[in-house]
Length: 196
Image 1 (cartoon, rainbow, N blue to C red):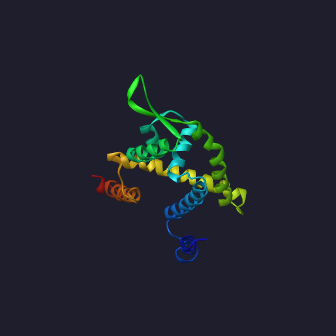
Image 2 (cartoon, rainbow, N blue to C red):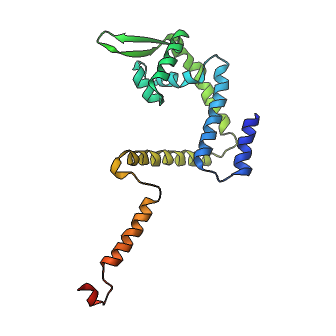
Image 3 (cartoon, rainbow, N blue to C red):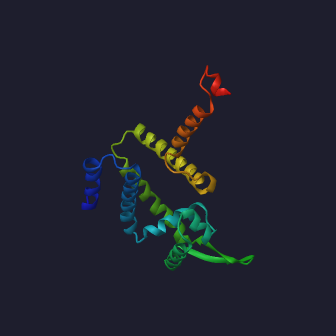
């Protein structure tokens, strides 16, 4: 175990066990990436190529722009990766005769063959990560993480809409203001003078 990993574990178990979940999830994600990166490196496949290969194994023949969107990276990053993957023989880039504007990306035979080699490595990484964890805890983790993703996606839509931008706690503050306004606007029971 690297010093970096030991420090992360010590941080979460001893130093700041109640730090924000976002940090814990980020650290878990980094650990997954490092574990898979080591496995991929044995076969000379950079981690950045793994993401694009996975997408192309599911949907071959996408444009570079579509690949960027699905991978969640900027187009220049995709362009650079595609050049490297093409030089390694994993993909072929083509313009269609009917659409000269877009560059389409297709897996080569070698790129398709990598699936049988690399997917088991990713599955192995996942299996290592859940060693010693009860199946019901794994199921709960999946449920909670999916709920968090849905909550954050909903919040992203709210934050992107100018009229619905709000600060944390704004809803609670608005409810308090509404209650205070109700007390001012509504006369006390039995007080006919206040109603006049």
